[in-house]
Length: 295
Image (cartoon, rainbow, N blue to C red; front, side, top):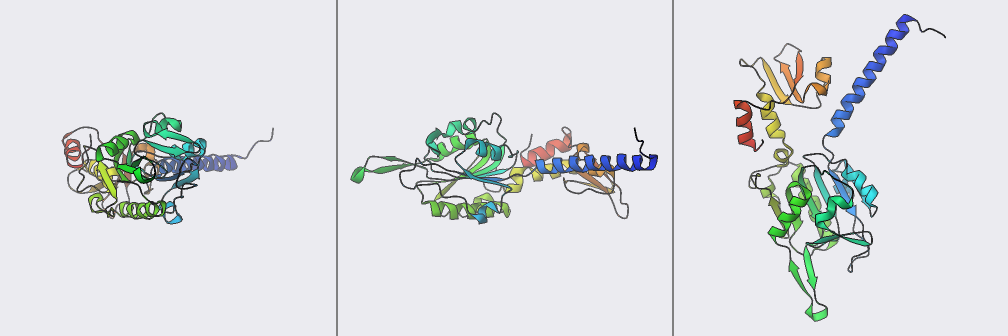
């Protein structure tokens, strides 16, 4: 068998190690932030032939998007969601059900219908679909609009900290336009309580969420994580720590996210840095949890 010269062998080993390190780093980075937009197509609507898809201005703001009535394709998109992400839906719906292809699915079976056994804890869900029940026909037709209590039940189904949905029936083009405005405000860091709901939408939040002051960054956990990382800073101010998954620093330790999400850097002019795990106990941990609603 032909033997590889020692120098070439060493270079081969180094290059392979670097490739593995890069792939590991990218895999960890990609795990975070996979906001998704899904148009769930259906033919069950009596008013519109199809579900009006999420538009490009909406999908351009998201990492994942799909427009389909195929549960497998929708499942693939949902599986990319992680804790702290945003899910945007375009659907035909009412407070109890939504349309999926030729079928009608109860909201309580949302995750199960797509084969998701353990849904992530989402930061927010935006449902761009009607939220009224229709009764009667002709002149006797009437609508019963969704209540905040019903929307709170849907929020719990989605395992989401917050939820936005229309308070009644809504025209698809209007729902799409409103959805774009709400999503843009969320991603721009606006307080959720200050988002313009056009007097058409409801905003509900979980009991642990400060509904009046919370922003998307708070819901994603960024403020809490930054606070926890600062707990690692020694007295004297010679090292600063922050929650940072992107900075590769100047050493193998900084590049390896397995060492922790907290990026700790020595004061200038020192180039030194390291990564550490988030603290899980102690006075500082308790103070951060109390301030930002963590556990």
